[in-house]
Structures are given as C-alpha cells and as structure tokens.
Length: 64
Image (cartoon, rainbow, N blue to C red; front, side, top):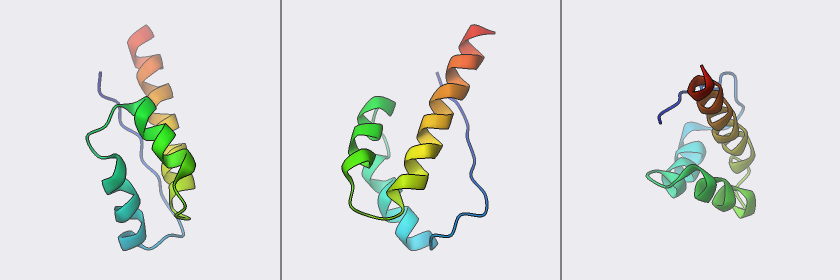
C-alpha cells in the first residue's frame, strides 16, 4: 500500500534533507525507520517523523 505524508516549514536545507532521504529511498518502511533512528544527520529526525506519519496514514487508509 502507498501512503502520502507531507512536511512543511522544516528548518533543514534541501541538500541535507535529500542526503537523508536518499538513504531510505526504495526500502521498506520498517527498515527505513531503523536506518533513520541511528542516522547521525540532524535531518533524520524530521524525516523519521514523516515516515512514521505516512505509516499511520496507510493504516488508517487500509481500515477504511
């Protein structure tokens, strides 16, 4: 299942966020969360929250 989550007004430069997103692109959601949990970059925390929110959105969408 595919879910969408967006984040606005994040105080991280796009290049730094892109580095973190490229680490998890194409991976399963649980594996991506594990990678983000231990990633040393500062942008990994907002991206972690975003992936977690997308997983919650997918659960809600699947129940409906």
